[in-house]
Image (tube, rainbow over the protein chains, first blue to last red):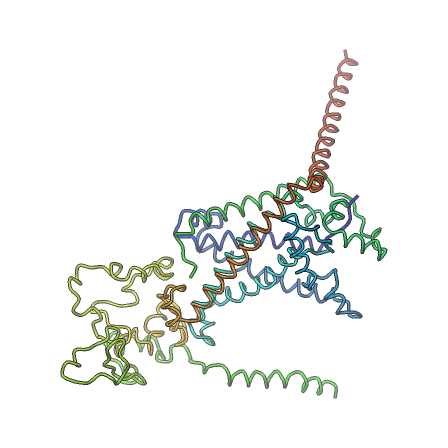
Length: 272
Length: 263
């Protein structure tokens, strides 16, 4: 039996983020490493050095539009009758003191000391994933626009701010890509509980046994609130599963290609 | 009436904040303040080499005779002082260098050749620093002097460049070095801040994820879930394959039957 974990808007948002993030990584790292063979081959994929920046800029604009849409979605999801509960409650991604507790408990569990924490709908690492993107996107967008329009920027800001913007844009991009391609991919694909792929974000549902194992408090809460029956979902169709397995592994392969080459050719580039 | 209230309540605060903002923001300098007409400019100034006094006068910068590292005003003026010069203020910044004619810029300035302008835009040193003798960047009459750099150098490629724009460090100092802490502290702080964030995030989450993975390996329960997922996938694939196989064999059988019937 499956229970629904993500709705259609959330899944589409994730899919949009995956596609745009990979394009931004390809074009961005292609330009960053342009003095190396790796950078040139990446840029060639996107039509060359000049075409890459045009794609990078417009995909960035699309990402910001998506981010704006996401903010509207969040505002719509806030329960006006009880905003505090909907913002700080267990269905919210806003971190709370229990997340720190869970993290500490889970670290102890990895050493064999104590039991695994009983998690609710969102685990602390999932919240970290979410907020990393949430603050990273505007930072990349603002610095990206500044670098794309340096003359306009310098009308109101001194030129040295562009040096800082370039540094922040690159450093944040490296941080985001390395986190996604190492930690997020490991959690989503490689770790024993997820291997060969955590399907929840694509299928929208999880197997009940998986939910009870990973998020027991969430299942208990659903049953207690009488929402369990509503959350029941059909397992995904075979063709759909094959499709997102291919997509997921393509994304994983592309990410690892950038990560490995980025490390190998890292000595030829500078962060600033 | 309501419209008026809405207007007064909405538009006026915005206008007031904007005017407040204007007082806070630095004064706008129009692009190429010195260059009112490019054609006349070129004909009368650049081509002739004649500049108005206001364009080349030192303004706030005073002629400076200094010994690097010695606080101003503490060294005595004397006959020998006239020989003391800072290279960044000489009309020929390379004056007196031995074997200068046989050297290239990169031999003495290797780091300067690795910035974005050189590596990405293929800009050569001469395109900005001009022909020999290369005037020092702070020399009064140098086009690289910060009072006119934006108009004479930056605007060649970045049309509309302002005085602010020329503040961009083309030859950035190494962001992580202690010298940068003195010359460009914001860059130094941004660099180390981001590096710490990057290293800190990965230093926590990579071992954490690996340890969780290792711990899950010891849990038999954890293995049931992937088996649950893949098992279903493989079963579905198998079933799909079998049903297709069944369909194909049925079709074959039907064709054979048709053939037999025809005979």
